[in-house]
Every structure is written in C-alpha cells, then in structure tokens.
Length: 160
Image 1 (cartoon, rainbow, N blue to C red):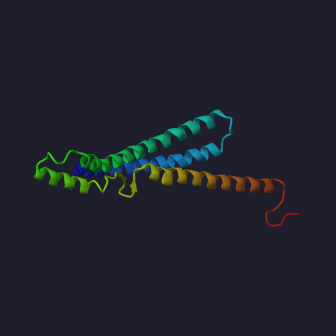
Image 2 (image 1 turned 90 degrees about the horizontal axis):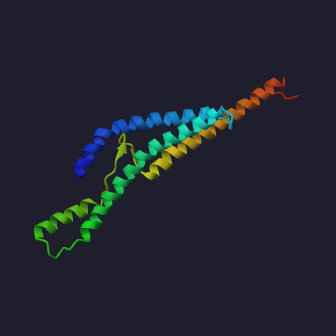
Image 3 (image 1 turned 180 degrees about the horizontal axis):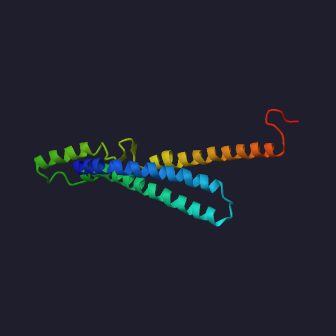
C-alpha cells in the first residue's frame, strides 16, 4: 500500500503542482477583475462564482490528500485493536511492522513541496488569495487617490 501511494505521488505530483500554480494565478487574476467591477454588476457575480469554483478545485485536491493521510494513520490503530492472541507468531510480527510503519503517515504532495491537506489549503491558498486581494485593494486605493489629486490639479508633493 505504501509503495502504491509513493508511486501515485510520483506520477501525479507534477500535474498537481502545475494545476496549483495555474489555479493560484487564476485566483489572483479573478480577484483583480472583481476589484475593477461594480459590486452589483453581473460580471462581479460571474467572477465571484468563478473564484469559488477555482477555490473548490484546489480544495478537492487538499481534502483528498488530507483523507489519505488520516486513513493511513488509522491503519495502525485498526491493526492494534485486532484479536492478537489467536494469530500465529509470524503474522503478529508482520502486524507489528505494519503498526510501526503507520506511525509515518502517507502524504500526497504538490511538486514535492506542499503537502496536500486542509492546513496547507488554508495556509497557501486562502492566505495568499487574501493577501493578493489586500495588496490589490491598497494599490487601487492609492491609484484612485493619486488620480483624484491629479484631477483636482494638485500635486502630491505640494498640496496648496
């Protein structure tokens, strides 16, 4: 089972990394587009629904990766709760190896850098999306203030 998980991770890690990279870029661009639209416009509603779909796409990878990790740690507990006295000694030794191995959970990664889990979704996706929106909002407010001052004929350096 562990070799299979390693093989799956090796096959899909690059594809998941590319998916994460493109989806993160699309998230940032969607937020930028939302900031340029009126709050009550149809384009804003479309962009926000698209943003939700992109977040869900990333979250599904993280959720399933989290499930694989959780289930792999439960294997040791399930084996430990078995009826050991009626088993042959060689099988007991094999089960001890399984319990020992299950202490190191299976982790599916994105590009061997980011472990797919609920925590990484919150850390990397939601945090970076929030920070991108905050930075774009600050930039938009600064641009608006600068253009407002320029429109009124006042210089930023010399306000008279």
